[in-house]
Image (cartoon, rainbow, N blue to C red):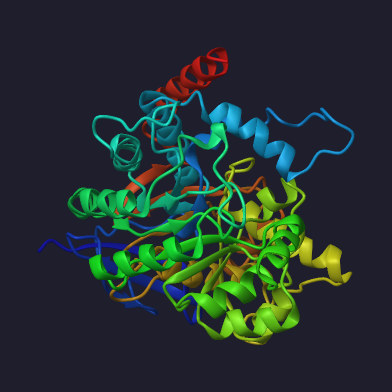
Length: 462
């Protein structure tokens, strides 16, 4: 099998920064060799700056990228997540298979240019606008897989189980018709998609949307069905994002959402608890003990007014975490890290909150932790620059004005905290295949034009 390699004067390995690093990978894109203090063999490509692991994006609703910026006005006395959701539903009703593929293709190219090398797609628009299934029930799922393949991004597809409009099995609303599936229908879809995802090198999991949208019996049956199909398949769920959700869950069950989930579902390392914004200290401890990943989406949580996750408390209990761009108000891996750290600073009135004793540079510590957590949540071997992991890599531009002349660890800090975030990214590889060169994807212009056309058509459809 053919071996390819890349030399970097500085590289961020799982153990920290190393100098003169040679990385080699096989034809399948799997890293076979990482050696520090090496000499560059003749003819070996050299990274244009510090080499860092690609960032997994652990939470995405692709169609919402075309919706970004369209709700930033006040239409009532007090806007909230719930008023935003009503507008989002109106937009979701207009999405077609063709527009979804164009929107997702551009989004995934944006992600690659912004330092993400993989995405967990939390996909809940399944049917035609009136709720009628397409002739091929996997139509919209396949559109997302084609978009990921065209862009060249790794993907974990997470079809969403959505059945009710509220706790206590409240009937779904008319504007939720595109999302609704029976449990048997979902398991059939997963069986249909298993072959397609495997053929594309993608991963497949399940996303019970939330406790308000999936009754207890359905949650149990869906998790059991997924496990029978693939015992390692990831499971993602929205949980405790909003205070109203917490209050409604208490009214329904007498328990808070995270507490209820831990008591009634087999939560373990396969699970990603998306947001988990509003937890008690005991819930932080109990959730972290399961090994589940907390899926933090700082720019979306700020955009929607969700609140701030208590990261120091989570880390105190050994909690694992990663970042996602969720509604894509912002598509930028470094921006999510910046917003996460700044949220903690504002909440605690401290600086450099997420630095660790082992990694006092905040950007270094956060990058390593987010890559590990994102890899786990993705169910894929994308945990960093190490043998056995996929060759997902980002090279920063050492000549960028914000980085030039600095030591490597400070270059990463400058990338996260002192540049325009995407501007310092020079090159990016997914499974050893270069997808970004000199900061741009080869399909940048054509995909952008198709996105603009799809967005305009979607808006006009209203």
